[in-house]
Image (cartoon, rainbow, N blue to C red; front, side, top):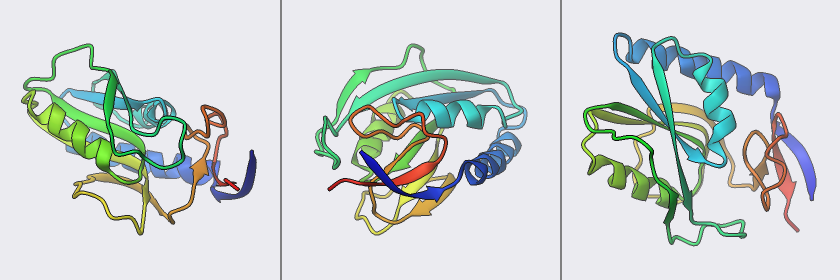
Length: 173
């Protein structure tokens, strides 16, 4: 496992999350917010983002899988852990570490809309460019990155390297 180069530094991530948190705070002023993290990758992004949000926030998590041990999505989505609370009439913000093919997220949003939240929005630290994906309305965007395999800041390779405090490009050869 070798990281070729740093793509996004720890300081750049911190500044972007502060910016996103400010926008979320303004948009949800006067309302309670339920942040839904997509495990495992989003837990670091969600924790750091939440520290920049000034409105009342609750947290819940879902675990979904479409990768297995591979570096590319299989396209088959499985819910491994569902939400612990009801979201009917709640303002829901899905937090993702990275949007790659978008297939998992597209499925997840459809699944959650059926539960009739008051609103459902999407925040993502990373969006991979140059990839065909279903249409996704990403309200709070972090960084657009090239279609490379990245690790760190919650993103893993075979469950390792999530703890690196920056986004690095990994040599998968």
